[in-house]
Amino acid sequence: MSRVNSPGLEPRAIEQVHPAKKLPIQPWMAAAETRAVVAALTARGAEVRFVGGCVRDSIIGRRVTDIDIATHDPPETVLALLRASDIRAIPTGIDHGTITAVTGKAHFEVTTLRRDVETYGRHAKVEYTDDWAADAARRDLTINALFLSPDGIVYDPFGGLDDLEARRVRFVGVAEDRIREDVLRLLRFFRFFAYYGAPPPDAEAMAACRKLKHLLPTLSAERVWSELRKLLLAPEPAAVLDMMEEEGILEHVLAEPRDTGRLAAMTALETDLSEPDPLRRLIALVPAGPHEMTGLAERLKLSNKDKTRLVRAAAERAGFKPLNQVAARARWYYRHAPAGNLLYRDLLLLHRAEEGARPADLAGDRKALAEATSWTSPKFPLGGQDVKALGVPAGPRVGDLLAAVERWWIDGDFKATRRQCLTKLKVVAEEGERS
Image (spheres, rainbow, N blue to C red):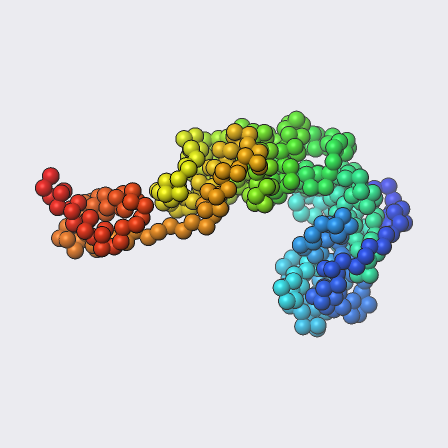
């Protein structure tokens, strides 16, 4: 348990350290939905500011996907103001001061300014405040502690603008204190470095991460996977994972053997295809067998669908060889159902990554990759009732006869019609009786 103190200054003095900057009105700020929410929240004179990622990404010209708004009004007032303007208000995190405003297809997270009274891990005892700098002081990184007024004024309490320009990722205040407040911030540091940083990393931050890495196992699996997933989606995750490896941090997240070289190759191939996939990148990063991959999936508490995908790829990759013929690939897809076509796509890219292939080397694979994405499985035209109609009693022989005809149908590239399959079934059944 620790208390948060504003680093070096009283909260209300912090905003005076870094002068405000004017930002041109961004398209998302000028959107009708945004203006409607701002108008509702300010109807009784409250001040509101955009905060966090939407501010950070607007400053450096990146696409904004999520819009967070801060206000000094308490959440009950926020609910009333939104509803008074016929804007749907959902108390998604009202206990923590957050209301979700929904208008049209747009969602806005509206949070009341807070200051930490006490912190203990993921959660903290907070109190509402009207002090913008005190709210900024409880955030993790300087680049996430930026505010933006609806008329384009950027408020920068902790030098986040300079850090963005220098591609420097720093904690707000004392790095060790920020991590002890919530250990997930250790992983967030590396994730944000992967997207916004440039070497060398901040020395104080790295020292704190090294010192506190032993606390990572205290995090829930869901929170770890959430951060790891986002890191794997970064433009060059392997370089940051190498950094974590060198500092002895990665082993606290992934105990399995790791191959960042293969991950780097996979990332380059996926980037060329405009298809970043965190699960496929995890498969590339961890060269484990199906047993180890099962353990990893369970430890990270992946969904059953994702677990199946990891384990199947681990089981099939050792004997996998690319197939040159369309018909041969279709048979492979079908025999590896369900989702055999997508498994083939994973294995083909993994195979090329293991070879160290570059995007230019995919020229001969692009047709197969596109085909694997769009392929739909044909439906075998027979069922158990067709076998029983020949007088075969219920039992194992029904399945055996169906399987024999299905193999024939597959080997014929799925071209046989139902009538032809029925004829084949009759022949196979009669041959079985004679034998």
